[in-house]
Image 1 (cartoon, rainbow, N blue to C red):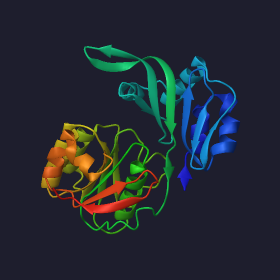
Image 2: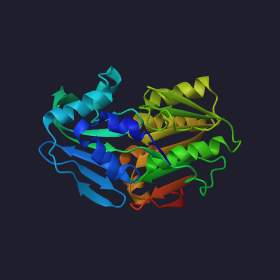
Image 3: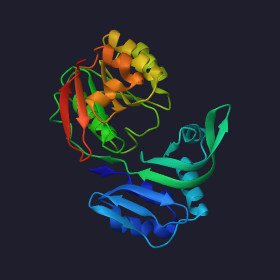
Amino acid sequence: MRCAWKELLAILPIWCRSEVDELGQDTLQELRLRMGLPPELVRSNGTIRLKRSVSAEDLNYVVNTASRYSPWSAASAAQGYITAPGGHRIGLCGQAVVQQGDMTGMRQVTSLCIRIARDFDGIARKIQYGSGSILIIGSPGSGKTTLLRDLIRQRSGAGNGSIAVVDERGELFPPGFPSGNRTDILGGCGKAQGIEMLVRTMGPATIAVDEITSEHDCEALIKAGWCGVNLLATAHAASKEDLYARPVYRPLVKSHLFDTLIVLQSDKSWKAERMEL
C-alpha cells in the first residue's frame, strides 16, 4: 500500500499533525474539518474526533497550502474541490460565489472533506482485464479511483498495447504511484479534450479516464470507442439500474462499447456484470 502521507500532513494545521499521524497513518480514509468543531477522522476501524476545534484560519491554511495559490486549483475549486499534492482530494463547503448562474469560487470556506489517496497493488488482478472495455461504478468513496488505478497498471503490464490516461487533476497517478510500463499520462487537461487529443496523437490501444460527469465526456468516449480504442472509466452510480436511469450516461450505455460493468459496494467489494440493456 502506498500513500503520500507526508504530503498530507504538510497541508494540515501544525497543531493537529502529530495526532493525525498517530491515529490515522494506516487507517485514515477521510479527514473532515468543520469550523468551530473538532477534526473528525474517518478510519477503516472507526471514527474519532480530536479535542481542539477548527478555526477559519485553519481552513484557509489548508486550502492555501494545498492549492499553492495556483490558477489550476482555482479552476477546480469552482467545481467544489481541489487536489492536494499526493493526489488527496479536498471537498469544499461554505459561501459560494455565483456569477450568471455558475459557481466561480468560494468566498468563505466553512468545512473541508479531505479524502486520502492510497494505492493498493494487485486489487484488480481478479478482473478479467483482457482487451475489452470496462466501466467501474459506485457511490462516492467506494474506491472507484483506487480500483481504476490498479486496473490500468495491470493491463499496462499484460501486453495488450499502450494505455493513455487523462489524469485531469493528478489524482490517478500522483508522484510515487507507479502507472505501468506502457502507460502514457496526460495531465492538466479536461477529459473530453484530452480523450480526443490522445486518439489523434498517441495511438493508444486503451484510453482511461476517472469520473465521467458530463455529456461531453460521454461523447468523447463514444468517438474514441468507434475509432477502435478500448475504454477504462469510472462513473457515479450505485447499481446497474441506477446507471441506466441517469440521462447523462444513456448514450454511453446505448453505444454498447463497454463489455464489462464493475459494481463497487460500500464495503469496497465488487461484482462484475455484463453491460446489457
